[in-house]
Amino acid sequence: MESEIQRSVSSLVNRRADRGNQTPRAKDVDDNAYSTSGRTSYPLRIIWKIGFVRLVLVVGILWMLLILTVLLFHVWSCQSSIAFLSAICNKDGKVYAMLDTMGLVPKQHRCLVPVLNDPESVIIPKRTPDKIVENLSYYLEDDLVSTESNTVPLFGGHQSWSQRENSFRLNSTMKVHCGFIQGGGAAMQPVDVEYVKKCKFVVASGIFDGYDTPHQPSNISARSQKLFCFLMVVDEKSFSFIKKNSTVREDHLGGKWVGIWRLILLRHPPYDEPRRNGKVPKILTHRLFPHAQYSIWIDGKMELIVDPLLILERYLWRGKHTFAIARHKHHHSIYEEADAIKRRKRYARPLIDLHMKIYRYEGMEPWSPRKKTLSDVPEGAIIVREHTALNNLFSCLWFNEVNLFTPRDQLSFGYVVYRLGDSFKFFMFPNCEYNSLFVLHGHTREHSSVVEWVKSLDEFKSNKTGLKESRGGLGLWTPYPGNLDEVYLPPVARTSAAG
Image (cartoon, rainbow, N blue to C red; front, top):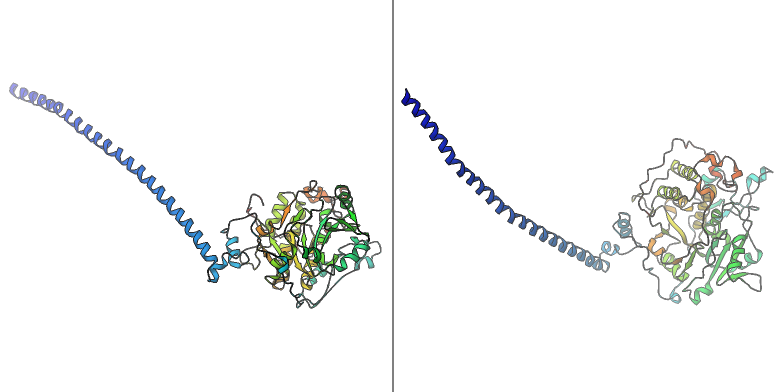
């Protein structure tokens, strides 16, 4: 019995000794394993770093090669005989315009205007024959005035909704409202009426409410100085301001001049708002100067720096166009433009919304690349046109919208184009060329009006505030023959921080 106990005790002691002897070995094995993994992970980190640096270098080299390849392809494609490839470089072509709308063409503020070198080499073509509209006449008396003795004649007339609708239906012989209703204001001086009879080629501009002074054009050839009449339309307030701040000379017939500009004084402005008055010479150039065959309109704050004969050759005669205007730099849709006008407080927000609801009700879709036009929104500070019957009709219809609704003409331009459909053809040239035709000068004072800050229609309830235009914009206050309550304006995504 005792011997068995001794054997069991001795076996336990042996086991503990074995365990004691095994522990250091196990520790050595663990230590060796840890030290081995540490030594192997450190070189791996170095390899990863070196590989990442090489990867970045390879990607950078490939990117530079890609850019170089694209540039070389662009240069080659511009000189290629393949029509599609050469069209990429043609700013007037549809391929370039499509790439531009997709955002694949970098935006430039200014770019080279591809005009001829010498105005003397320009050949003036024959006039464009009138085909769609052959005879165009205008209402000269206000029908409502003749039936209601207490009604005052308006410059734009009391155009009814049905008359407006009929004016968009093209016929060979048409009679439309086009401003200059008898007794409505904007009368020219007899000496100026006589002077403009000789003007076949016109560069026209306008200053209202004393916001600017005339800026003398530069780079005008001797041929253009003889060929063109440079006509600056002003109201009485601006005329007084110009006399105080510029040198005004008077010729032997009584005509007033500032440099090359002949001042055309319009007495009795037709509207309360200076902004709306400025649309008369801008849009109705053919009515003010009925003998003109071609005209170039520039805003009063601009200094023209390209010869006008070269402008006609570039934008009309070269491409056989009769009407040319620049694309807006940021906006394609009138609803984008309307949103920007409200955001930047350029006109009363509720009136802009009402204006757009009417257009939306009448089927005006937001612009998309599927449309045939490059854009629905122009940059209207420069307009180049031949005074054909169809162009004159377009100008009348455009002005009627400005007269009937808000004076923001960029909103109504695209709508009139939409209503006339494929019949009205025009050239919409790149905005970067537009910015290269002139030098922009600042206004002499802030161009603002209290109506631009209106946020609610309630502010118009009493016209004692002077906010409500009394002689224009009547379509915003006349019951519309349709239910606008169910009209919702399309959502607008802001496309540019500057827009």
